[in-house]
Image 1 (tube, one colour):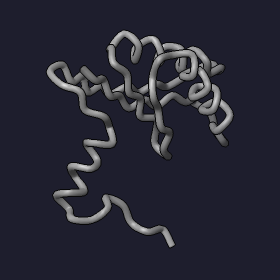
Image 2 (cartoon, one colour; image 1 turned 90 degrees about the vertical axis):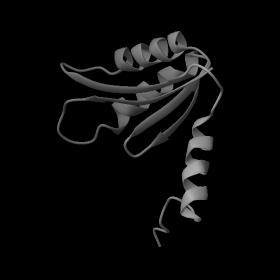
Image 3 (spheres, helix red, strand yellow; image 1 turned 60 degrees about the vertical axis):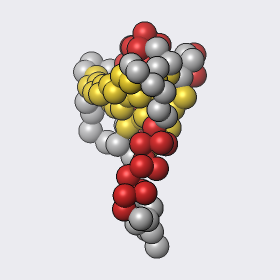
Length: 104
C-alpha cells in the first residue's frame, strides 16, 4: 500500500511565510516519509496512513503563530503500491509530453 498526501502548512500572517514553511518541512525529516516541496505545498509519500498523519501533525505543530492554516489531502492506495511520480508519468503518457511548460 502507498499513501500519498498533499500538505500545506502556513501561519496566517502578512509578509513572507518562507521561514515558517521551512520549519514545517524540516519537521518531516523525523518520519519515515518521502516528500517533495513545490510552490503550493508538499507532497508526502509513506507506506502507512499513520506515518502520514504523524508527519502532518508534526509539521503543523512546528509552525509558530497565533493562527496556523493546514490543508491535508490524502490518496490512500489500499490495494497496490503507486508512487506520486507514477501518477504524473501516467498523465504525461496521455499528453504525449511533459506536464509542465518551460518557464524560459
